[in-house]
Amino acid sequence: MTDQPTRRAPTPHLQTRPATMLTAIGLCALIVLMQLVPEIQSVVRLPASAVATTR
Image 1 (cartoon, rainbow, N blue to C red):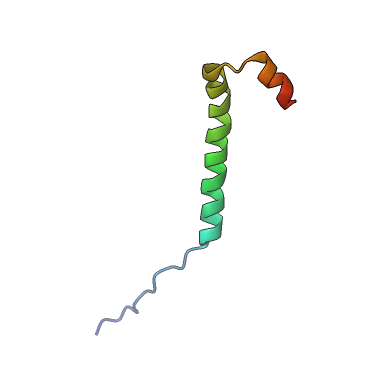
Image 2 (spheres, rainbow, N blue to C red; image 1 turned 30 degrees about the vertical axis):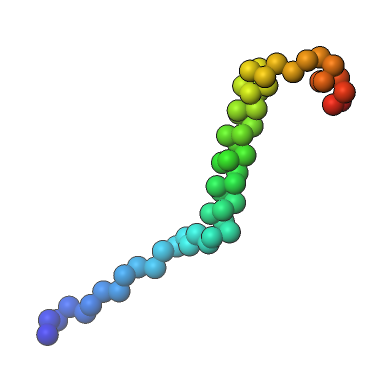
């Protein structure tokens, strides 16, 4: 046997839970969707009557 004691692996300070990870993924998806919506609307070019009825 050696004179040095065996070292334990350090425990992580932050532990990511599945709910936290899903929330982060959902927020990223929401941000991407919000950035794509104006581009989609400019491609579709809704008629003015359809826009007025939705308001």
